[in-house]
Image (tube, rainbow, N blue to C red; front, side, top):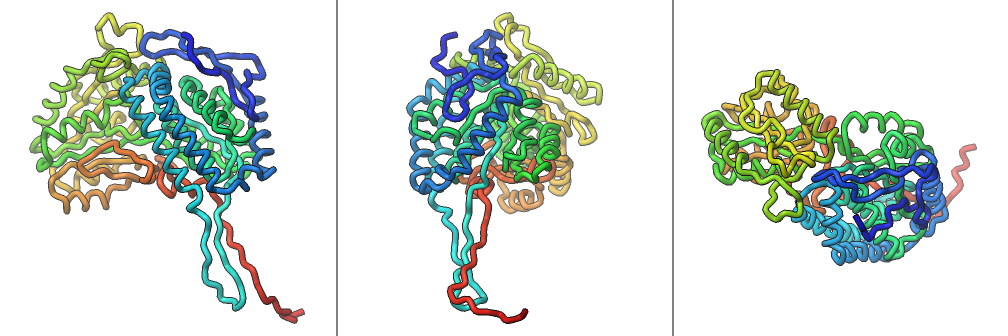
Length: 492
């Protein structure tokens, strides 16, 4: 396929191939066609990019650029994303298999993230604080962390990249980004846009390759000051261990197993609709997907039946077909993981209410499709309730009391997000207060916006992205004290 894309790495202001000469084919998950061939970098490429970022930070050009000017550059990136919205959306859908309408919405959100941090760039100038010493100045300032390693996942390639790129650039850091090796195309394109707006050489570097080579080098390098990683919990723990070599600052978002509580007094039809929306966008490949449905016993059977009837009517297909509601999974390997997950649920005694297999439609046989699946009669001791499926699978539990619903929702090693559906505002607030998660939606699910921080409790990660906290992740706080009238102590 002819794409107007560099299909190279970007290191120290130059587009380059991998030092090894190795390449990787990028596959469209809808039909397994090769849509691009990109460099497959390794440790040597990562070291080269780290050296460029280190030199660019240490020379002080970018960090000393006035914050207003950095904000202007970040804003220009947003404008170019809006200009190239359709091209980016097409690339994202080719790369991930999601519907192009979803990708268009992603591009709008991404532009919004860059605009938000452009506005914040010059709003973090520090503050004067009280001093116990007369004739003195005591101030707190915020400075860039330094060289940032940024590792992004395959499910929302450019959206997740924007959450890292925009605040890092706005605060004067330099960076090396490693996108997922299987979905790098829109990240490559946004680096083209950053070059177009004049981000200086060495400030933003892009290395393509696998996590165990490129990612591992970023995590273990003593010249990297921060690692921001979005991905799985197993890899996240490895990064924590590797980063300890120089006690890097860490920002980790490690997924979730997110409960969605439905009370009997909720608007039934809206709750059904939103329970589906909470999971099946992008075939359930969402870290915040509400895959743990917890339904009040009095409406449980009716609710499950309503879900099943809706799911049976889903239209699976190409992301470029306007009738498609759900696309394929990302790869054959990932589909196999989802299939093993479903097999485990059946063995554990959960009731397979719908789905649980690949579609029979001949038009879908070339892609990595899997039918939307619902398990009923689930309990918290089942692995399908505790483990992240990262696919189009809902497990349904039931509860009798508010206390039981909250207890079930918290019975997890994760604490990323959750939802509560009820028309009782007081009850909703009680539940939200007791739910141990970084985000709780009330009569809503999977709503993100740049102003609201995102991150998890427990093993869902460390730190926050988005919001003002998202910019704080990329700064160090320094206290500067100046005595305007020093005197001798004469102690010694």
